[in-house]
Length: 497
Ligand code: NAD
Image (tube, rainbow, N blue to C red; front, top):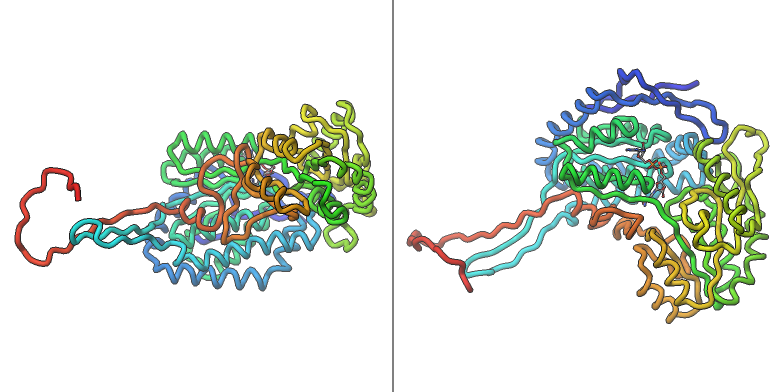
């Protein structure tokens, strides 16, 4: 039974007046589970206006009180962890353990937002000139907005609105049109935690609604996570309208395997990080670079990959779920065909994958290519499916050069027993998140999520201290208090000391 997804405006969940509706489907069955409105212009306008009005009072709420809202919220999210994960599984197809991880990674950011007071502290310098002190304070920007992708329906919205709102802003969220249900539930729990009406708004839709937000004069900052072409559009349009923009984009993450690494560790980590979540993670490993004799391990890698199969969210034996949509599956199958046509060796082909009881799901089995060259489309494009491509080089220098020549810079990893090799890799690699014997090095929220180059447009990253800087302005005060009333007369020059 499908239901109509509400918008969330000024503290109320209500039905949209839109005449344009999209289907939300369960990717394991392609059954329609909800109908999603593309919010009308009036609704988006109302959401922004309500956020602008609410900002006037919300920014005056003392910071410990804003932090306490986040304490309540993280507690509620923990109490509803399982329920949120099941909902998230229904719209993404993620297996339940992975769905719980998605929610948990978001909860960790809310825990961080509960620490907002110390994160917002400024700096002080006494006596910067005779009797003069100087200090900085941080203040919220105003109305911020977030546009989120399908692949982490809990974690990525939670990267954004808790930090922005804890910092004193109000927020308009436009969740992925493919997975809007989790966002609505996150908002219901936020309201239950005590969030005043208007601090968080949710509107739905696609390009039209996003473009409206990007051009809106009352939106001060835009956080985006999604694919490369859309990230570019968001960054260019948002900055054109003179907004602060952070746009997290696609990736092609390499794992470099040195011949001195532990073979079993390499193989199990490569399997998990490439096909886990059906490869639909921006930090998934999609390229393995075997250095020297390590290439002999590809046969054993194939044996281990073959043991993994996709399945339904509640199937204990399933390694991962379906792809998000029929179109996503077709795109991945086309890339697999291109890989074969361009001369790569398809060691394991997941193109013809079936799952018992789910004949209509968007299944793709684990797929492994060896002998891949950098000019092949399976190397050049982000596949975003359970497909691992293997390249071979002779030296660590060549591996580093290969990674650095790739336009993306989200994550990378090296597996080695050599501290010197790891240190060299860490220092020379042009990628923002580096794992050493760790395949998916996603930073916890006390750091920031720091993709580089083609994987990120902007300068201040998500969560951690950088998010606080992104969602605030710094004001610097220079102050002098006169001890007596003796007039000093006008000062017409710059003081040298
Ligand atoms: P997407 O770019 O298709 O959609 C992202 C959001 O943008 C959605 O809310 C969507 O409704 C909206 N949108 C789509 N087309 C638009 C347009 N033309 N104009 C304005 N808005 C538009 O991305 P997706 O398929 O949902 O997510 C997968 C992508 O996200 C992958 O490329 C993945 O690497 C990337 N991703 C990156 C990170 C990161 O941190 N770098 C994290 C997660 C996902």
